[in-house]
Image 1 (spheres, one colour):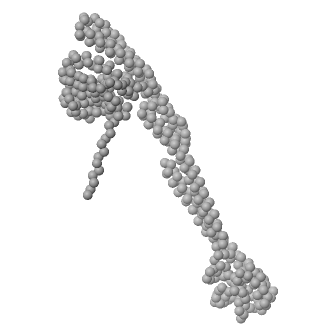
Image 2 (tube, rainbow, N blue to C red; image 1 turned 180 degrees about the vertical axis):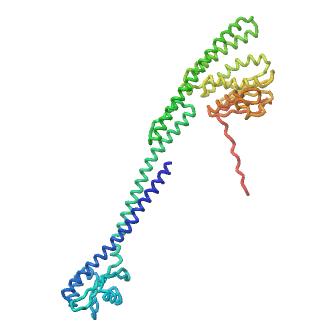
Image 3 (spheres, one colour; image 1 turned 45 degrees about the vertical axis):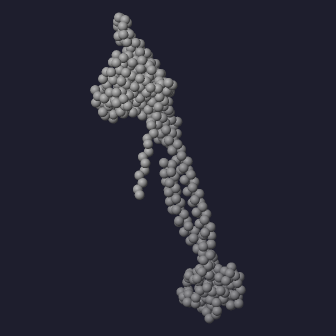
Length: 433
């Protein structure tokens, strides 16, 4: 945009400068021409005055030498039957034509032109006064004037282009700031605001952007508060379920029920606290993936034991911090582990691998026939809504990583999330011999 404005200003100013410079250049040359001819006319008129007094050749010789043109050998007097007094630069034929017409005339000659002024003496003879005007006199001062006009045009064009560049710089800076703020807002930095700057339209756009960001933050905060309220309402049926679990006789089933109630109560508490943190605080939240995985495996291991599923965990020796709120990371882990229990038969083994590179869940089940379709909401094709893997995909996009769905080394499906998108191998260029 800035370069386009500079080119536009350069083109417009150049056309305006040319529109004025060309006529001025022509007028300057014409003025120099008219000045030289006028000076020759004055020189000739002074000689005509002398001829009106006395046409003696000796007197005329002194008169010619006393003039500026005569001293520069540019003036001559042509008397009938007498050789030219002074230095002549024209032909006898041109002198004869001027004497016959008895009118002043300009005649081109080598190196310039001559001004011929005929006059009639008292005795009836026609005398022609010749003044030679060289080309240097016809163009005297023209090149200097053109140089000044050209310099002025360059200054005007450069100044207008510089002014357009400064104006475009301000416009581009305001536009880039607005675009950068939009990208930050889209990346989850909901506290991003724009300082209105630039033309009126951009200031209006910046104010509209700030209003939109405020409304979006308020909307998300209300949604989080609603989620917290809904989670809080679940405590009532959970309390009833806990009472029923406490009333069960001692044994493995009752113990698993009471443990499941405790875990569910902890998760509800985490969801309520996380939802009420607000959007801005949640955007800065860091969660330990290893800790969340350990908590969720404590829950899913009960069901794995009940279904006689062998399982193992690889890695997890050091914390893996992820820029995702705890409640959302819990949803990601549950979606990946729940996928094993929902789509594989009982007694099918699974393995969980966690490291700074990401989290992978492998199983020995039948696998996923259509990985692309499995992440589409409502059309997973496996008797589910497809929301679980879509949660995993959105979390991968949030951290700038990538979700993976592939064949597992155990023979079934591999579902995982890379915290950073793996580098793609470059294709070798094919050379043609």
